[in-house]
Image: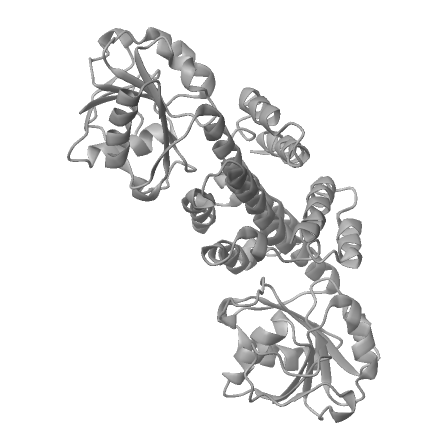
Amino acid sequence: MNIVIIGTGNVSHHLCRTIENSKVLNLLQLFGRIEKLPENFNQKIVYTNNLDELKKADFYIICVSDDAILEISDKLIFKDSIIVHTSGSTRLDILSKHKNHGVLYPLQTFSKNRELSFKNIPIIIDANSKKVLNEIKKISLQLSKNVIVCNSDQRTLIHISAVFSNNFGNYMNVISENILKSQNIDPQILKPLIQETCDKLKHLTAKKSQTGPAVRNDKITIKKHLSLLKGSKYEKIYKTISTEIIKLNDEL
Amino acid sequence: MNIVIIGTGNVSHHLCRTIENSKVLNLLQLFGRIEKLPENFNQKIVYTNNLDELKKADFYIICVSDDAILEISDKLIFKDSIIVHTSGSTRLDILSKHKNHGVLYPLQTFSKNRELSFKNIPIIIDANSKKVLNEIKKISLQLSKNVIVCNSDQRTLIHISAVFSNNFGNYMNVISENILKSQNIDPQILKPLIQETCDKLKHLTAKKSQTGPAVRNDKITIKKHLSLLKGSKYEKIYKTISTEIIKLNDEL
């Protein structure tokens, strides 16, 4: 199965690495806008930044930023190939000019300098026909054990969930790092707590894991905290989230 | 070193377990308001719910809710003992009627049915004199490798940081669980992402770990997400946090 990957960002980097290690999939070519293959990629990869040099493959995986998908899709001219994008929140039909199109969205946070195993990463797939979906499923199962079929709305909601759990969850740690640094306290002291926050979820739902002043509706502590945060940029976030957590009580 | 613990909640449960396993510390007695020792405690512990039966010990550790600390402190009459509370956001001087008083605040999220090793949990301590601080340090070092001296304001700010990282971080997972459940999608699919969110922090600061539409200032995706969240109780949280993350760009 010959694959061409388009884009040289973090998703592309991790996909390339996984495909290179596959016995079934073959990374035929990588396309990017920049002149040279970035250093974090295996330098043996066949690379081009010239669309006219794009090879014919079974499968084109578009790994570019959401707002560039349409532009690159319009330039692909291989009629019988399958064209997929890897975006969480871009609809399937953005690729509808292609006879065979779909989505292959890996549900993970990809950063430079973090090596990840694709094996456990859920891959959310979609396609414009059963036949194409089957082909995408075959490839996805070579990358991961966990392949899930979803339509565009469901996929966007999964992406939104990922934004809450990862982006917003991580931002809570950005805030706590900043608060501790402002006191000259080593942010490392929070690491066991952050680890346990994650470990707990192996055994409990997030709802059952919830602790702290807000879920106890401990108004005195919340007031103390807000008075120390007064005037800081974190006051509003503290208030907004606490207000929502307090309401959890009615649901528990 | 004879210790009496007051309170039968989660902190008390985990402290009792740790002290029972110590070769140096001796759990003399446990006091609680309820009639019988709860089942999750070792049933060999000497338990009372009658303050008149409280034994004389070197050390009293108050593990009750913040608003009950003053009331129980007023009832302790042992002059030469050291009295500490375990609260993150209660000032040291709430115990000032006692000649020797201090704080022993374990920085962790404690839930029932989660066995934790105290060894790696940071313990934040404070006291009304150097001599008392030294005694509290000795005991704390029997419980944990990581003992840190902080004043009341610093301790509250550490507690606030813990609220952001744990309580609010976990609430982000409550939201994502709810969104996925509403779509009949198994919330388990987010587990690898949540795990990686935590693992990343072993190698990167939270600031450098930040990914997603907000930190990219990807207005199109944010707008899509907000349109899908429109009218839901998560719309405001999504907007508030994204607005703050977008500002991170100016700092990066």
